[in-house]
Length: 219
Image (tube, rainbow, N blue to C red; front, side):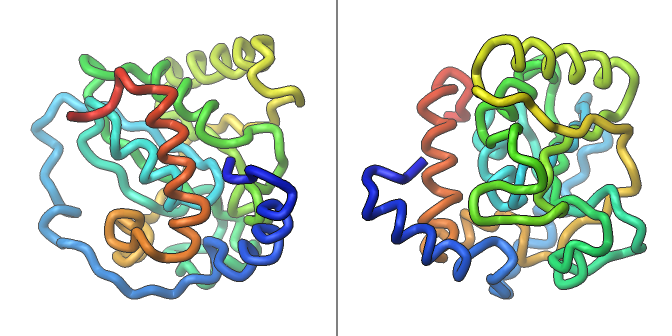
């Protein structure tokens, strides 16, 4: 992703564990009114994806046409109302996820899945780069049977396409109880562009996706 030479690779292997998703405790807040935007009256659909640190997933999908809202949160665990600190232990069973509200007349679920497969490595079990643990697992939580069928077909076709050299290990499960993450995790890249993890990981990942999906970007 940002490994241009061996020296850069070595440097990142030292620095990223220090500035990983689970290390930052920045208390930047977001506009409450924005986060409580009323979307009930809109003809929107919902998708829930986990692809490593939710700061990355949120930032990737926020830039797409037809996406009205993206929220970082937790899903798939056994503890009620988990905190970020609890989820980071890897013992609650939750994955860091992004919930996406989108207009299917503008961007389809299949297209969201295509972006999902290209925006992270779905072949590494419980790991994305320096972020290790079940909370960083690759997962698609489907909201209905149509999404389930689409996700499974998309996974099979992506596996067969050779996009990734190793088999995809992404979990595909019915959406479980979902909990929004703390306020300071929302709109994280926008609010913290100079935070080390954002500079080293989130920003470059967003730029990679922007280059691949130019025609899908918001104006």
